[in-house]
Image (tube, rainbow, N blue to C red; front, side, top):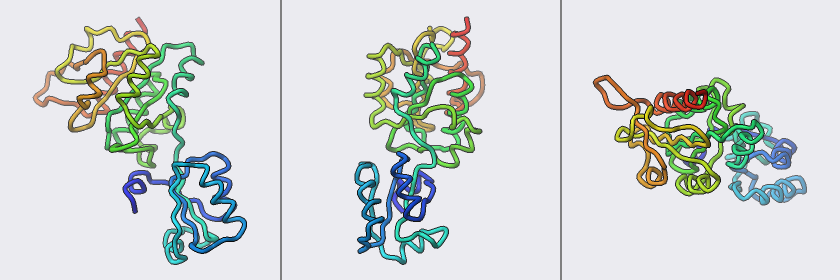
Length: 252
């Protein structure tokens, strides 16, 4: 399996009608497997639909491979990996804020790799009233079944957008009036920052924190006051602490 398959935990769709409807309904299909040499009408229709979806990888394989991948044994010569959960666009997140008549509040994640952390952050985002979460396409976990479980259902209500370049996306959102604050131990105490108005909260990787290029794009760097003997918080806990400081300031 490719790294993409390993990281994505896609659901399997089997059978010609089911696969064709998945494409026609606009579902995100990660990969399509087709019986090599099969040229009948229904399969050709599926291939035509698949080619309209530029992100779909098409593989022609032998029957033995399809049999191996199949969960039902009734694949009819076609089988697809479809996204378990659909991604939103960044514009959808901004539209949600506008619809609610609120200043945009987005949580941006810089290469979060632990699915439990991502799920917990999506849960926090929902409870803190964030309008969405933005994650990178590469070197980070996507919307897997584990993420969904850790989100306690919040994944069904909080839009998650996947972008190619986090730093560039921050620049584009700054052009639309958002200010960005990132979490870092060397920053200003979070209570001393003005976190009101249109804002993006940037949380970094579990080990290395926010990357240099992304940090340089941020307007503010916030530190969380800590009294203990160790010097860092879990990424999802840090996201929760800062997100609810934003909530507190918005309420005042």
